[in-house]
Length: 72
Image (cartoon, rainbow, N blue to C red):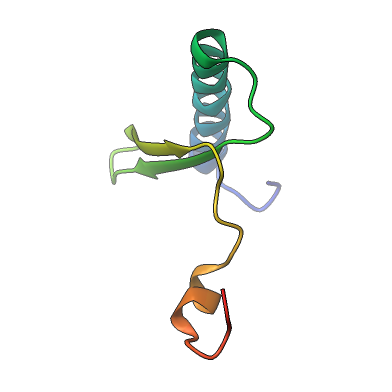
């Protein structure tokens, strides 16, 4: 994160903090998960929104999803 601006570092830190808080809330309610995937977005004003949380996140890049020759 050394190449980020101060503002970008603050947003990255906020994203991590939010993900950890959400994880704690989910695991308190439903038990432990091996991994969680978070879809978070940041608007132009730096506001963070949670789009969804996945209990079994997809491990394929967007570029690979576009390549129809790669079997998923």
